[in-house]
Length: 229
Image: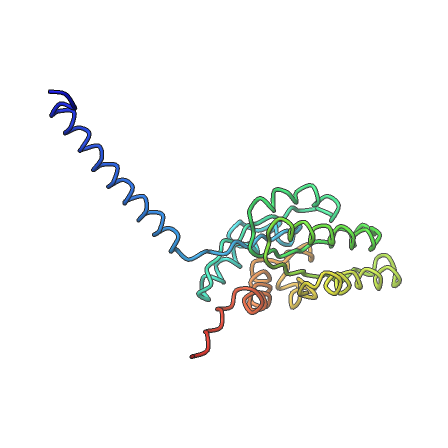
């Protein structure tokens, strides 16, 4: 008899059933994955204040922020992209790596080392502007700029020029500004490490408690319910 023999027909039938079952499983698997809620990625791009200089990993700003958000019912993956000692110029070389994390939200905390070294405020402003642009081009949906206040080391003229950098960036690029990253912590010996500059774990907790609600209200709040029809 011509045609496929019985063993071959049985094998073909079994293979077809297997292919259908596998296809159904994959469809179910991928549809199930697609239904999972998206966990926002927050990249903290900064210097030693966000790198957690002098602190264990779980006491640094990114880890404390992630834990705080989880406790508020706003789970997120907070990526630490801080490097101690970085100026804004040096941080530009790390920008592509941070963008590769595909952040939904970026917290941009840089400039302290520029001010300590007396770098031209115009240079600092240009570098931060480049970062804002590149993060946006890389797909970041939102960015929070955090400012610093320049120390008096370089005189009043420099201090005033530097302190204008962050408000001007916020206006020019239409980004929200958290005026001082160290608000409520700076110069308090009980909230800083012995060298007097970097926050201790308690100080970081206060920064998180102040900045966290701002972050939630700007970027992570629940969408408003649709009005009844």
